[in-house]
Length: 108
Image 1 (cartoon, rainbow, N blue to C red):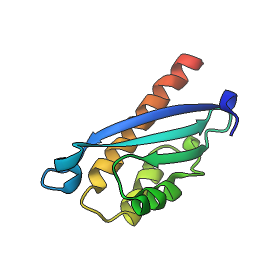
Image 2: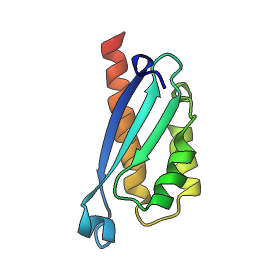
Image 3: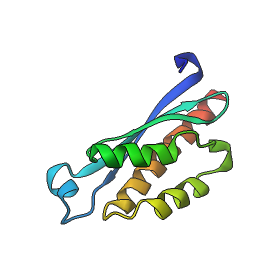
Image 4: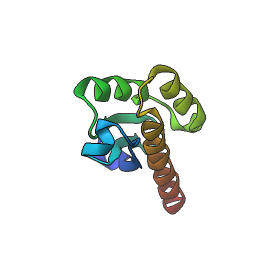
C-alpha cells in the first residue's frame, strides 16, 4: 500500500439500542483505505465488532471498486451480514463513502 496513492477515510454510526454494541460503545466505526488512482478499497477495519465480524465484513469490502457506486457494496453487505447491528454497519460505510466523495471534489 503506497500512502501517496491512498486516502484514509472513516465513518461512524450509532449502534442499535438494546444491543451490547450500543450499551458498551454507542457507535460503530469503519476505517477505509482507498486508492485514489484506481478507486479500489485496499483495506477496511471496523471498530467495536468481534474479530471474526471485523474480518468477515472487511473481506466483503476489500477490493471493491468505488467507481461502481455505493449501492452494490451496501447490497453485498446487507446480503451477507445478518446481524442486529447490520443497519449501523451499513450507515458507517455510507458515512465513510460520503466523506470519500467529498474529498474527491476537493482534489479535482
